[in-house]
Length: 306
Image (tube, rainbow, N blue to C red):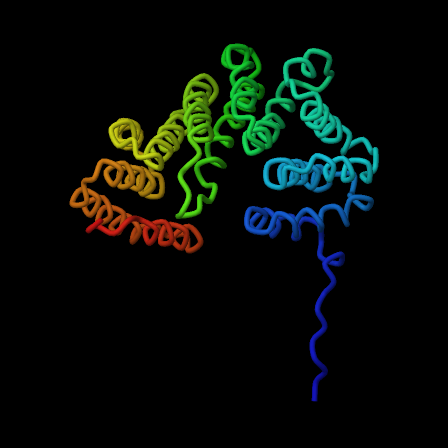
């Protein structure tokens, strides 16, 4: 009889493989992922994978666990090697900002490049927002907007656009217990972030970025029941897809935005029409992984009778 297969120890899994899996599950199991990152801190390689581990630690420990002390332990345990140093400096900036409670004051004296600061800013904003400091979070996100939108470096403009988009997305997707009302301050920050992302991507990206920013805005308005505003952005999203000859996947998600906007507008029959459009597009998507994701998205739509 063959012996029972042994379970491979987590530390033996190649870092790249472990990071890919951790990225997929970090939102559902942030404490477990954080502990895995902390265990690997002293052995992080001096390469892009090591830097990615630090980036993920910043996000999980600040945005999900709201534990700056844990991130400080992670940073203290990582090697001060050349390839890791830029990310170490970014993490140190995020920690200093959280501790100071003022992003502008820390930024004024920081040698960390703007693009790196603005990518880290999303995690600072999310921590403050969820700690009941939505006003401070809003001010920190809004403060660099004018500079970011007019910055001569494309990477800096994109970093700010991604920061605002990610704040909106994280707040939209947060779980709200059915027996509790939504948090008005967090919803206001979510909408502000989505609007800033739309403006920033118009300055930093392509039609695809702008179309996806309209998608984000449509879903953000829909989740708080603002049907008219949701429809405006969903229609813009779909119109851009049609004008640019977008592929089936892009059009599938534009119709999803329309479905949620129509649901927020209490138009169940129109939601059913969008569902039918999505079902037709689903059959034309060749990539199996993408098709599975689209199928899950379709199943998550509200029933046509609601």
